[in-house]
Image (cartoon, rainbow, N blue to C red):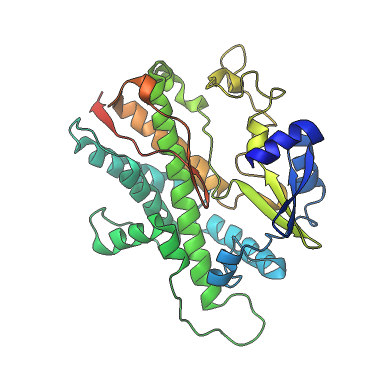
Length: 343
């Protein structure tokens, strides 16, 4: 999408490109993306065709399904997550309980350098386990570790053979759809929130002066990384890319879009300021089904860590690299280590 970004400056917010024989339209900017996702949500309600995912998932699950199947599964998933406590006090209590388990694991590091990826992924995955299975696991549990291995290995998940017999009839609530939808929830609910937390900790290591905001944690709002940075929709054979990063990299909405500047989200009196250009969970029919869960997870885990530990970087702050690693399903922070010390 870098090429698209260059062309946007020349041709405007709607750019047509050809990726080989495939025609692609890229949409940039808040007004354009809002008009498509909210103003014309029904027309852009298809996820498009991605051969890798099509071959593996066969159109199953809630992430890459289309049409009536997608609508029914999405509605069912939203209803079920709410019934299981998403957005309710019981769900927050479950997250807080898991946050305490995470604190114990962090204390066990005894101030030694460690990579936070595994512990954060375990904590977030355990929240999904509590929501979907009604059970949480010890971080040393063999079955849980095996599940974490699969989640952290995207291609292993995508290539896993399901081998289940489909039910007859036209119902979308088949074993295949249930299994793939559950995998979608685990993968999206673990990696995206884990990446957000890892980025949050990494930013505090590079800008330690910002850690002093812990006294005002109730106003903290963090960026949630979507599983897929670019939403795909198909209209009459044309793939449409909604380039959500274009919302965050514009001079209209943010004075210094290329710089880390918390004031982008603060009023003059230091209170939180909402920005229309900030669309971390997408919008319209494409809004993230787990938004309520993700917001609670990120806030509670991040605030709990900052309230109980002082963070220390292993390398000089000038050497800390905030640029992401690109993967097939999104941008993730580069591996790093840190030390934590009890307050």
